[in-house]
Image 1: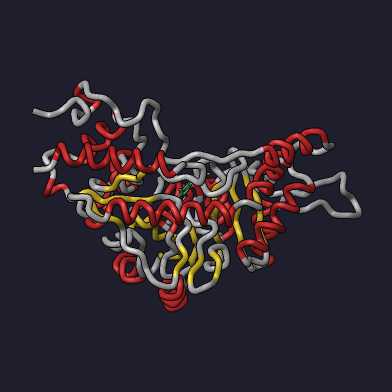
Image 2: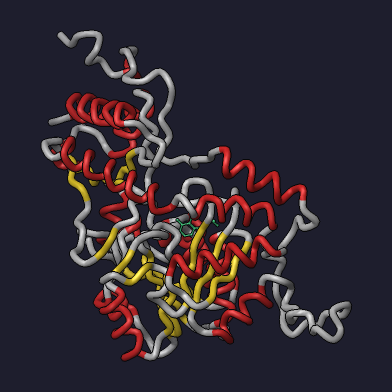
Length: 396
Ligand SMILES: *Cc1c(COP(=O)(O)O)cnc(C)c1O
């Protein structure tokens, strides 16, 4: 007979934790609050001097010549697609293992997202995956640094050059990471970031695009402001609209918050690394679970710590494991249902199962464990205890 402690919380047992530990959360301190308060007391609420100085700091951090702040990571991706001047029917290769926004941004510009499979060990897209779906209409490839590990940008850039395809990075997971010593943000022609609260640093909602190309930077600035040219210094009272843009501006008080957060990025990535090492050690003996592979020569930003369940060794599916873990107070999440398996894409674009087998297999097995800089060692010990308890009780 099971003891009361071993009985799963969803079956009436004692949960490992009383309160739910989220998978990710922001860290805010008094310096952040003071920076926002100071911005609110200034003359600027929307885009002003704090946006410009945050952009300069972000460009310096990522080694890019230009950084253009926008209102979300999705707006950053949309802006990147826009400045590529895609025509209807042009194709953009998107890895299936990503958030829906990576593919949606292609549709916003009336082009076609074409889904590529990923490496089953890292869940990163490779040149060989892109090669399998490239066509005469392919204009761009969006590389997604899944979980915070950079893709192989050397290989992808060579492939893109050879195929005359633009390389764009969806670096929403990987701010603070690097590839062969070069920071993420300077690895693709256009690099897109999110400043959502679960990401490395936050402005509430917000995003950024980095590029080395000054003419692309100017187009990005125009796009976030209705397609209006930068005001002419001779006639600052009259704006000139040159193309169709959107209002994707970041406010000055959001920029003040993000700039204050950026000062702490290095320390936060170190804490994420420490927690990842502790998970590695604690989970080395976990039955029926394996961690994703890491590639040499890359610094991982540890946005997510992902465990892939070995379903062959379990009596239940991944969703039952997630439900039981949440019952224990462990707020695990799933990243992601592959985008081509979303009802919208299946219904409107006739994507189908079998198209991206590695992504589909992982989509049924992955679980993201709680990981954020303010998480304590004892919070992490609860996650490990919860996993051992839940997996232990569902082993075949
Ligand atoms: C968070 C995220 C986005 C979207 O960012 P938002 O700021 O929420 O719009 C896009 N792609 C990936 C991979 C993300 O993780």
